[in-house]
Length: 282
Image (cartoon, rainbow, N blue to C red):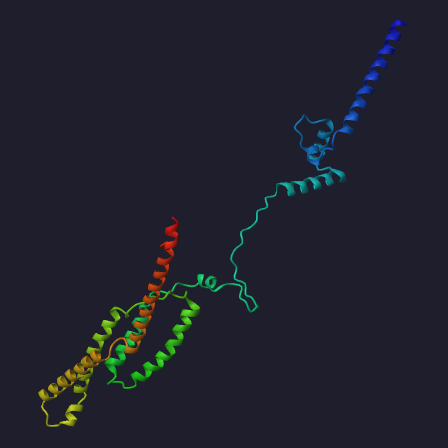
């Protein structure tokens, strides 16, 4: 009887302990926050039996609808949290605008254009044309007219090139065109000699003076060449490089500049030197 009573009390004690443990576990579950769907699949502790079953179902591909929903939520969480979202740097894009105000400034438009090279090609083109007109006018008298038409077209073409196809170059103040000036002067002397020689070879002197010998024809050509060169030098001396009215205007501007400088220097000297009253007070 005593043994049976002891066994009964032991069973009741064990049941009471189980009930207390179960109630404590339920209270802890109620008080603890809900586990995220990530924690149901990934936990740092030892896996429980339920987790092992869920993993087994996942591995075997026999998940139920609730498990599929959990996987969808899990993938969405990973996609939102671990996706790298970096902002792209704004790239310069040339968008045509229909408004009156352009979308780009002139400097931005010219930044993508080629740089204007030195004006050697333009000078060389004019120099070659000048040589053709100067040396071969007796052979082709219409060369000067063709050069004039070409220059009228060339002015507009060069203006379009400088304004629309290349970066606008920076201007520089120079006295003259440099070595090209000396080359033009030498070309002028050479043109006089060549043209006089062509006149002598054309037979014009022989038609004017039929009885003139060969030596006389050469002498006339040489005298004509010297006369033209002398007249060229006289014109070069008499006609100044800078016109008289330009010199007068330049002198006026220089005079006004000096007077303004003197006036400003006097005002500065008066403001910097103390007056007599200030010296007396000191």
